[in-house]
Every structure is written in structure tokens, then in C-alpha cells.
Image (cartoon, each protein chain N blue to C red):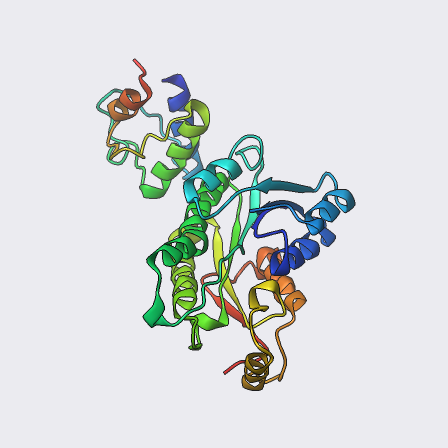
Length: 74
Length: 241
């Protein structure tokens, strides 16, 4: 989870968003973190590089819970 | 920069590779089989030329062979991707063979699309400003008897390239096509002297297209000199009309 948070922080910083954020299972990638499709694509690439799993390949990912489920993270 | 180039073993691909290596770039060359020219690149440009065998008629297998840690993984930031490998399929529309059509589209369309996907993902990971060049063909612009299916595969990639440019321009990724006229390569070796004469007569410069000129155009589009060019198709065809 810590690794995911770091990736999200980096993508947000690249977009010029420095505000702190909280990650809960319900955190929406689009609504709460301000990600658009291109940010989600970048997050996919970073997660795949770290975990070897393409989280968006098998369906829509809306929130942090969806990512954790696909990566089998608790 | 690191450039991924398909169809490196002969013809235009070998010319493009030669130009890029001479300019000092590193080339990750892909081809179905090794060739003498591949061995020459390895001996003349060791350390900057890397080769991988992959059969683009099986797109997903080819993608796995190329975009992996042993070849073009995320630790190799791609500055360019040149989709050059292609299969020619000439016949009358009334003779279309579904199997040959599928095989040609796998090489000319599905694999280039899949490779583009992973080139973009590589660029996203590295934050690099990748330049993509698809080798199209004059046949996508001007009708040629017997080339309808081949022309359709090339036109598909031109449309794909234009939308890729629009979609990814915000991330600094450029995509262009180069449409060469008929060159003296193995792919056009099936032409009869009469057909060749006819093609030359249609060109403003009255000759076949020089592959080096096409290769130099590709190198230009990859370079920062072309930093404001995206979504275009550059015809390098001796002025065919």
C-alpha cells in the first residue's frame, strides 16, 4: 500500500498537485485524487512495473479497493 | 536516444538502422530472422545495436519477446519507435484469401498497434518524449491495381498514427507516418520491368524512391528537429501524383 501511495504522490506532483491526500479503500482515483485517464494509464504502468500485474487489463478500476483486490494486497 | 525498430534485417529497415547508428543512437532491432546485415550491425556498432528475433504475425508473442527485461524493458527509456516491418500481399480483390489477409493484418496492423501501446507505456514510465514513426506506403494515397488489401493495412496505420498523436500529444509523445513511393527493395522485387517503368512514369522525378532519402526522413522525424511535427504523413515518393 505504501508503494501505491508513493506512486500516486509522484503522479499528483507531476500534475502540480501538492496537497496531502488520504488513501482509504473507498478513495476514488478520479473524484478524490483528481486523476484523469492519462494519469490512470501512468499509474497502471507504474503498478505493473512494481507488481507485474496490469490492474486495468481485466476491467474498470474506480477506487483504491479495486487496485488492492487485483494485487491481492490487504 | 534508444530507438526500437521493426523489420531491421533488410531493405528500408536496414537503411533506417544504418542512418540511426551513424547518428550515434542505440537501436533495438527486431526481425523475423537474422541476416548478414544484422551481423554487420552487431560487429560494427557493438554496444549500440541489439537484436531480437520476433515473428510479428503472432502479435502478442512478438510483444512479449520485445518488451521484456532482457530487451526493451522499462529500464531502456525509448526515445523512438519505428514500425517498419510489413508483409506485402498483392492480388486482385476478387481473389482475397482470408488466411493471407489475416496474416498481413497481424504483421502490418495488429503488431504495430500493440507495439505502440507498449512504447507509450515505456515513455509514460520514464517520462520520456517518445517519437513514433509508422512506415506507410504511397499505395494508401493513390490506388494501385493488386494492392487494395496492402493499401488498406497502411491506411489503417495512418489513421491510427493521427489519433495517437492527438491522444498523447499532451504527454509530449509524437506520432507520424512516412509514406514512401516504390523503392528498389525485396518487397517490390516482384514487379515486372513494365510495372516498374509505369511507376517511374507516374513520379514527378521519373525514378524509383531512394530508400536512403526515406531513412533520413524517418531519422528527422525522430529527432528534436521535428519537435513541432506530429499527426502528419510525410510522402517521400519522388512526387507521385
